[in-house]
Length: 449
Ligand SMILES: Cc1cc2nc3c(=O)[nH]c(=O)nc-3n(C[C@H](O)[C@H](O)[C@H](O)COP(=O)(O)OP(=O)(O)OC[C@H]3O[C@@H](n4cnc5c(N)ncnc54)[C@H](O)[C@@H]3O)c2cc1C
Image (cartoon, rainbow, N blue to C red):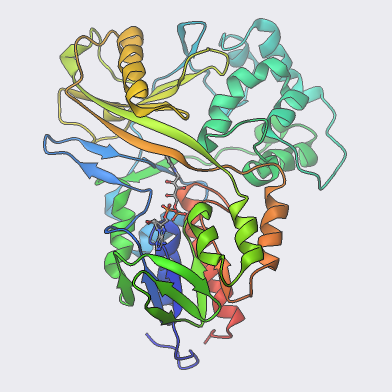
């Protein structure tokens, strides 16, 4: 497929994580020549599904994607992965909330953190009786007058659901962003809740008025999340180069390590902000400074493999979330062997234990202690692995969208930044960001057939 209108120079996509792969895929669909440049020796960036010799499948970052945002699923269909799609298991769908040292059953009938019926929530015990009632009273708190002003997640929670609700909502909401709730931008991270407040006068009322789509909420792939990255990469017919770090971005191309200049009519820069800022520095100092101001938070996941008989009971559960006021370093556990089929051989248990910024060895000791304390694990795990994302989780601070507008204004129309640092960290958001950036550059350059 070629487009007679395209200029000689291709569009250059920097980074082959899910954002860059989606951008290249979109350009290919439009018949626009592209060069995809990736510093590493594999596709998928943060998405890393690693099979082990003894039959486990370790996910280093994303282990599933939300289906309510359609973009990842659409891409999966386009690259022929219908048969590979799997969903979290229903038969093991048990979740706990750790508070006051006790494993409490996770409240049923929630939409993210929003209780869909009062009775079930009041009986849950995840907050004090007063805290639970105050959360439900959100239905009677008048909405804030319409405003363009941003606010933090903490401000939103306390304003709508009360102070104590922070202990329950923060692990569920801020966990996704590994964020400081006092800094996380509501407008960038959770605009849907601001919209519900404005439209229905209450988040609870609005959530109850908008029914959930039937069917599973999350999807993944038999071979892990890397399946999507590898399937897209395998179908790219353009100029795709691994092991090619870009050093500098210009309006007419890029310079790669070793000094080669690759001419481009446009550039889509999909690396995280902390890598993008130095690349922009020479040609776009103002944009570079603004991109460099975007902050990152850290997280560490410790992955532990056990034999099932090391536990006194079966480990048929998806995991647990830890209350914000629990006073321990651990934030959550996912029991991957029970959550998804094909993540551990029969008779084995695979867990991922999450922490914020913590030295990996300390996190490992803590993870083993907690798995023993909470689930009675006996003896050492068979092996452990780390997913060390310290300083690698984009932090969307209050004012993030306004900051993005300033970055946009400081770059020429044929140079775009896109990806998890900017418009959403989830895989569907990244796919959408890559494809949108590609469409926008194509339009700017008047390449539409
Ligand atoms: C622990 C963890 C759990 C997560 N869980 C989920 C989940 O369950 N569901 C979900 O939807 N999302 C999840 N995410 C988020 C999601 O995985 C990421 O936001 C997403 O993969 C980011 O994609 P990206 O393409 O924007 O960036 P990246 O994946 O970071 O890709 C950027 C690419 O740019 C390359 N690069 C860097 N510098 C250069 C250079 N100089 N030249 C060329 N290339 C360069 C990098 O090597 C990399 O391949 C999770 C993230 C983490 C850390």
